[in-house]
Image (cartoon, rainbow, N blue to C red; front, side, top):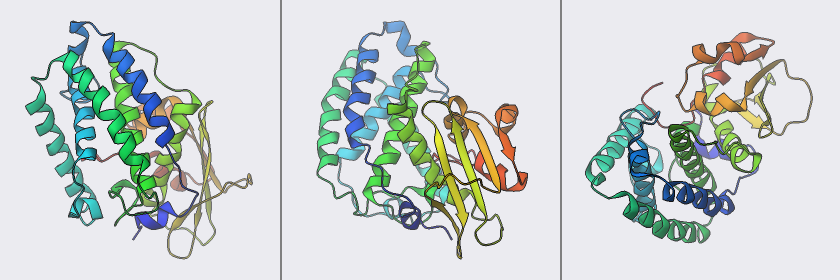
Length: 284
């Protein structure tokens, strides 16, 4: 069994808190420039337009500012599909009940809640127990991983809005590399059922300015992320930065981007990396 807390300890923590105000400012600048008709443009999120995605982001802020009581969802005691179903239903309920919020007021609300969420995050002990990140394993997760997951969701939904509007995505290294670094924490769980001899290594490389190379090693009890020492691995998987985040958030399928996935070595050890999931979804 892969435990989130153990995975969080494989590599040094990521502190994405300094990125949050800048990402929010770019989103607010974009939303503040929209015409009324732009808000109704459909996004890749099924059934949601630009207004709906922005409402969802506002709902995330409200949730972060509310009381984080102990619960099965917080502590990671629900299985993945049960938790994903709960989250998806809660998200739909929120968006449906808040659609009457007018566009200008929604932008004001996001501008109001953002700094308060950032201030709340600034006070946290990043090594303490936060909200469980179930796509990294079972059980609780430290706050640094919880907030990194929060950033990946904000960043991804921001890109959904930009895609719907035909605007350039935030694919620079400053914005995208931390998303990829957080998503890599999904790999030990993706390999949970994959047998291999002790010390087998699989490298996962993301090509592009925001990319990098991450290394998985089969340990005594599970697959672990280890610091990249630059040595060749028995199996190496290469993915493009333009599609890997869509692949791992289930916006595209492996079959749709198969021609762009390069696997050298044992293909059976490479495919799980392409099928990793770094979002809470029932579409596995």
